[in-house]
Image (tube, rainbow, N blue to C red):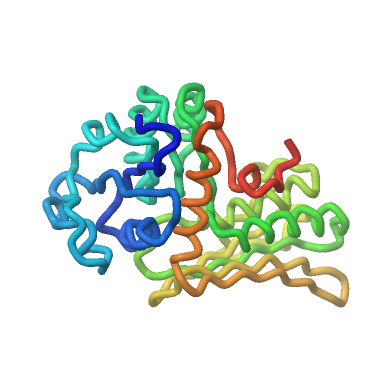
Length: 275
């Protein structure tokens, strides 16, 4: 691990992806941070390429590798927007080394969530369905509105993303759903309507509905609708640049440095948690 009084050295996993490249670029512009390495999956076309060139910065001398374990021997943490299976592998590595681990990956199963929680006994993990400040503020508002309005107001969550996204509903939509459920004092798992097709019958009172759209290059749009008698209330967030997620992830990493091991959220990072 690097010295505590130096720049925080972080490894970026998924370096060849959209978010990986954005993170590499953002690190170069962030005071107190330095890129310690760049990782991508074995067989990826970016293995061996210069990470700076990938991010449009020009050469920085850091080659993309598939050997994350070697890089983590001399770093403070890892940030990843990858796939669920990769998150589990990285969590085991960061736990073994007692590092900071920022997880922007979404779509984890209940079993994978349990593995991450166990890894947080030794790693300092910040995990969120969305790393942006605006979305986390939105989640706080959703919880408050859901708490204030009764079951006469149906809750529907709409989300749209680019055509390359592989999970649905989005991690952000589920985060907003959990916020709404917390406001209502219910369990999202038993009050969730994930898809409607055919003769579904009337809407079940108390359910939180989800609708997912995919197309084009949409970075991310989320709307939470409270549909009541003769009126509706909509809370909306639109992402215009992936840089908002990168900045949030870097902010989370810097916040987590020096914190005791545990599983944290962006609400903790931003001081919005009820903890």
